[in-house]
Amino acid sequence: MSYNIRRRATASERRATGRPWQLTMKKCALLTAALIAASPVRAEAPAPLPPDPVISMRQHWLDADINSYNFRNSAQIFETRTVARGGKTWPLAKGPAATLPADYDAWARRTYTNALLVIHDGRITFENYRNRTTPEDRFISFSMAKTITALLVGLAVEDGKIRSIDDPVSAYVPELKGGGYDGVSIRHVLQMRSGVAYEERYDFGANPSLAALIHMNAIVANKERFADRARTIGKASEPGSRFNYATLDTAVLGWVVERATGEKLASYMSRRLWQPAGMEADGFWIADGPEGTGRELSGMGYNARLRDFGRLGLMLLNKGKANGRQVVPAGWVQQQTTMIPFADSSALGLGRGYGFQTWQLDDEPGAYSAVGLAGQFIYVHPATNTVIVKLSHFPNPEPAGVVEETLKGFHAIVAGYRK
Image 1 (cartoon, rainbow, N blue to C red):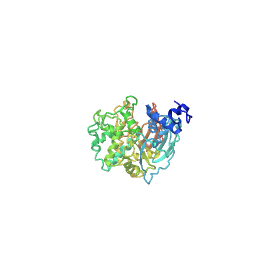
Image 2: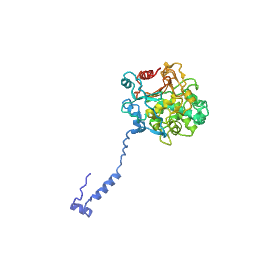
Image 3: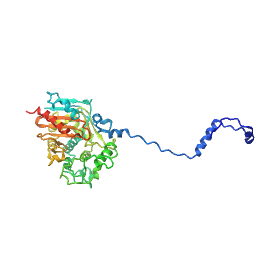
Image 4: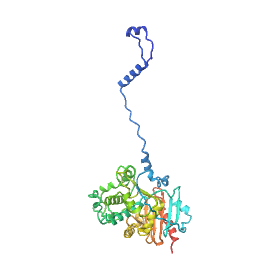
């Protein structure tokens, strides 16, 4: 249909209407609007929104081509909780140069090293930052955080907030009654012997494993709290009967510490551990939701500078003392680093034994480690008074032999200090 705007009417039109047949622009617009309003309208579905860029970043956090960068920039990707430093820093002097693995640069590349620190007799003997990392970067610890959470349990015991580690976890978190954690002691959870039906197996896809579901819903999407599944999980074995590595266990420990102390994990850690130990910079926990909703990810979410991870290892080596001050009870450190040997370590493929959220990786007498996904290590070697911190970016899945190659490097370093 078309209209002639302001067309002169013919004589017959004038006789029929008694007036000129003219349409002004305004009248045309009104007529058009009326016709459109009277016509049936087909509603079009809105275009789908593009993916949430923050969720996408989190989904690609572990990708091998960018993880070296991501692992030192977690604060830009996740919700966080600050663990504030104090006013006085524990000084770390320089010492004589360490003996390094042969062809150190090649070894560091083969073992995907981001940063390496060696402390001997309380002094820094080697410090190396790679892949454009810096001393100011705060690196993700992954499961090295478990060792930290166990230290917080020990401090809560010292404070009288936890009466005994043989208390059931449900005495502090009543929501755990009736499920797989009912009747499980804090000691069982510290030892990764809770007996709950959890597998540390991250199968994504059409039929995701429980661990994968928790990862996607809690860590990536922040739709649930990591520890919440502990309320409904079932039981697989009797508590204490077998070792079963489970990040959910450590999430429960963090929950217990919060309920026992009445403080958020970050504030309690700052007040009782980070500040008294004289750390040089703030650390932070990744959280599974915003303030007021999410909790600190006590099983995998702590971030700190390389030197501050070194101070943690040195404090453990010194039986809980930091810069001459007893920060964690010596008896607790002794318990935490006393290993229960694995009956068949070859079947587990995880080392030689386990203490309280702390590993025995090799046959070096008395040596123990905090260990995290993708090659994070605090390796404590009391026989030579040495601490080694290695922050890495292993691809996922982990390359065959990379942990063994890493330990060979550690052994080469401590060999230089044997008397």
